[in-house]
Image 1 (spheres, rainbow, N blue to C red):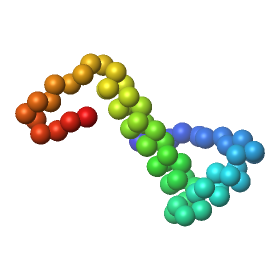
Image 2 (cartoon, helix red, strand yellow; image 1 turned 90 degrees about the horizontal axis):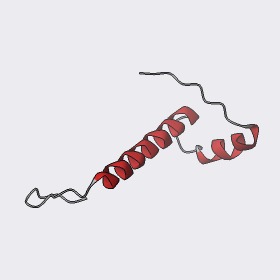
Image 3 (cartoon, rainbow, N blue to C red; image 1 turned 180 degrees about the horizontal axis):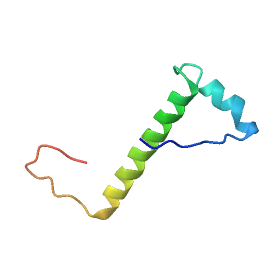
Image 4 (tube, rainbow, N blue to C red; image 1 turned 180 degrees about the vertical axis):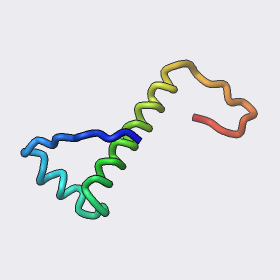
Length: 61
């Protein structure tokens, strides 16, 4: 695991805390958002490589 330090601008502090109100913690909310964005970025990169021929694989993108 790699530790990172995230500096949140003062202008974003309250809106971010409000958005994370239902999360167990602000840290958990940020981690979930980062993981979600990493997944989307990886999917975009995979989709741009080349069309995949999944015929007969029982799956599709």
